[in-house]
Amino acid sequence: TFNGAESFKACNLYQECQSQNLEDKQITCYGHESCSLSTMTGTDSMPRYMNCDGSESCAESKIVGFQYMYCQGSKSCESAREISSDHIECGGADSCKSIDNLIETRNMYCEGSKSCSKSNIKSGVEVTCNGHKSCFKSNIQCMEDIQCNGVNSCSGSKLISHLGEITCNGKGGCHSTEIDTNTLTVYSHYGASYADINAEMIQGMGYYSLMYTMI
Picture 1 (tube, rainbow, N blue to C red):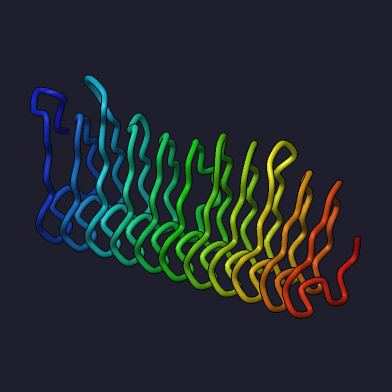
Picture 2 (tube, rainbow, N blue to C red):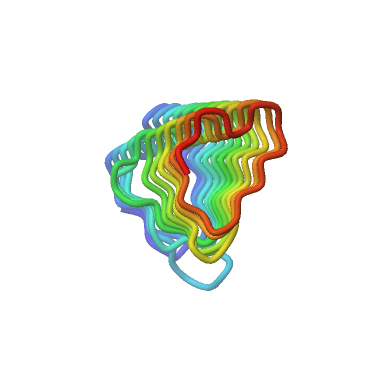
């Protein structure tokens, strides 16, 4: 167990901090599986940072109490037991994939391929899905805006945003998606085709963007 006596903890080697309880203001897991199966807790003063840089570095872990969290390695936070942070970035491929327990955040950015696919996300401000299939078959609840920018980024997902707007920018970004929102804007080719939509306002501007859609 590491405690908050230090301001920075780094786990550089293969499985170096695996299955441990880590507490600090800033924790960085560089090595392959370096912090997997662990519990990481942010302590001390703000800002608090959690960095999962290595492949599978924080897989199947519990991560709470950090202001900023970055899952940049491949499968770095896959199948995490719990994630809660104000700002979460999932940059690696499959980095935040298959997280069954709710990911709680204010701002969520899914940048890598399939980075947040098959996960459950609850956000207070925004969710942005930029990578290919980045939010594929996910359940996303957001108080404000959801953006599906990558190719098939939110395909097959369930999206809820009652106070904000859902935007489908990527090709097939909201294909076969269940959508419940105030405003839906679809710019892309096949953007929301075959989708099931409940919205006050719908704008379809892409080629076949609302083809075979249920409204």
